[in-house]
Length: 115
Length: 117
Image (tube, rainbow over all chains, first blue to last red; front, side):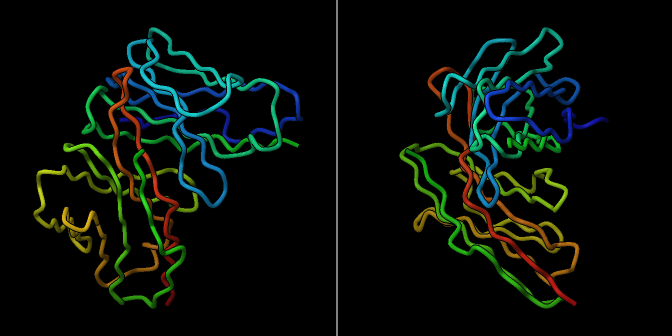
């Protein structure tokens, strides 16, 4: 079975631009989460979606937004890019959400570089 | 707020040595789950184990073992007879249920394990 897939793999953008990252969850999984991992740090939670509804939001500015589609894939949008947005963006999927036990399976990430 | 501390930034061992990665957590929840993930150079986080707060039994899976001690809020990970392929960054994480009905993982800063020949 295919795992979580993300596109693109790498991306270089200029400050002030906008970027859209894409994620397809494992087949049968209905929940998608987004994490930002800055070099040398652990992943930080950005959003979680379940059945197209936002179920959680981390401590990120409004420049970050996301949505989930009927096929459970998801997009993360970041507007007005800053140098500090340079990071590995990880998408994770889980079958359900709402309880602390659900394992999240991660994709390979999108490496975003802002110059 | 929940917190996970991995005090060891980097560990270097010679192949076949045993190595223990430490994880200390803070939470006010009575029910919680702890996880370990492995992140090889490719960047993808690989799920290793999940442990709930009611189960303090140690677990062994091949060369991997985990020691969960609620009294000291620790969930340590031991690799026996390490191999070069074990070289990676290892993250400990704590799961938290969110007010919106979702759940998130709070990660530690990771421990870089280097296994040399």
